[in-house]
Amino acid sequence: MATIGTTKALHVEGMAGNLLRLARAEAEMSQRELSEAAHVAETVIAEFESGALQPSLPELAKILAAVDLEMRIRLALYDDDDDVLDATESRLTPDQRARRRDKQDAFSEALRGGLDAD
Image 1 (cartoon, one colour):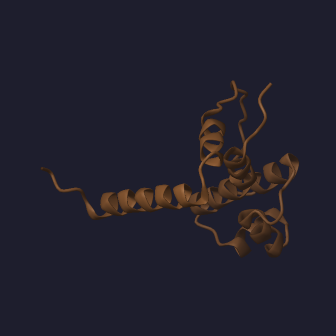
Image 2 (image 1 turned 60 degrees about the vertical axis):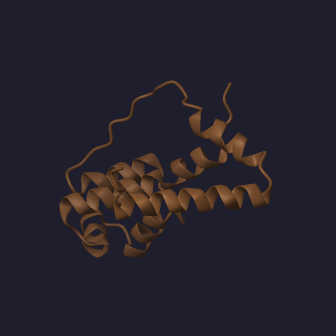
């Protein structure tokens, strides 16, 4: 049986907030407008979106319904890719992790700036 790793746990914790932000963007609503439509305090919407507070599934469904959206959930086999990467990362020394992050940052910056075709 799989045990959820650090990276996947962070993704799951941010899922509800991300869904609400996407719903607001699709509905072209502010947090205040969504809170009024869903009859939920604006501070609660902000806390859900930031991940400071996690909504229950019924709460999330109620808020999404206020903008004519619904959740459709399906089960799938557990994907342990992030867990494997977390385990690999945990075996590195702090210096190795810092060098790896520097290389990743440089690569990301090169992609943002466009790569030269050689």
